[in-house]
Image 1 (cartoon, rainbow, N blue to C red):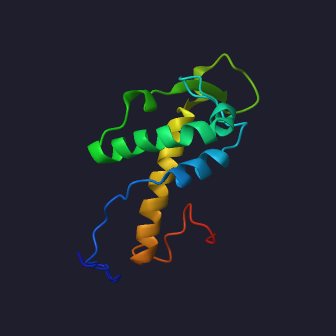
Image 2 (cartoon, rainbow, N blue to C red):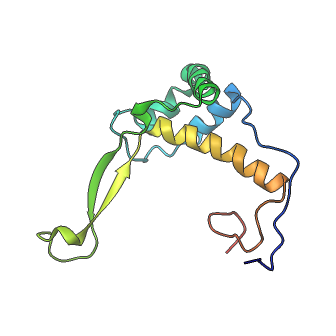
Amino acid sequence: MGSSMDIPVHADSFEFEPFKEEEVFKELSRLKVSKATGIDAISARMLRLSAPATSNSLCAIFNASLATSKIPAEWKAARIILIPKKVGTTRNVDNFRPISILPVVAKVFESLVFSQVYRFLMQQNILNEIQSGFRVGYC
């Protein structure tokens, strides 16, 4: 029934803020050029090199996605590759695990969204100390 942990109650509600061109530019500039390319064939290298010319347009697209609560279908289409689980036979389908490679543009958008959500969770002290997965400074 009841938990011994108190559930925090917060008066503030979360709302996305429009992204700024500088944020998009910074995110594009930090892309690892060795990142796998998605089904759209737009590489991280191309996005990083074109950041000065494309960050404004991408910012507008990202903000339109936030405003309409819609994500372009192309950002959800993945290139699937199979990776062998162990050294050994590749004749058995059970010896592979699928990896989904999403478009790099989708990953940039996801990173910007994550930043806002994570900042809100931290500011509102919503995450418990024992919630450590994927958090900087936690083991």
